[in-house]
Image (tube, rainbow, N blue to C red; front, top):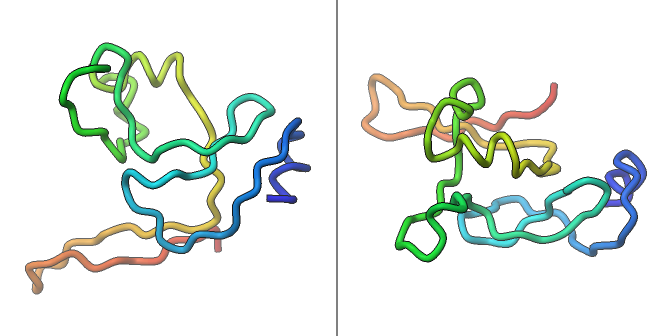
Length: 106
């Protein structure tokens, strides 16, 4: 997190180490403004608080601003999730399952 602290001019210290497999509902580091904190992975819009709605864990960036579920959060409740790699799940035509593909900045 030292590089994040310097790169984003963070004003606080949050200690967390690397994680190689973050799953939904786990606590993950996020940055809001110039502060880092841990938050539970998943999004529930303000209008759904108190209802039994499963948190969403992903959205397409090109359409999130149009979808009712994400519209308000996209406009008013953004944060940065510092990562350097992630898995994208690809469906193959020959197999009936998804294959994880390691994505990074290279």
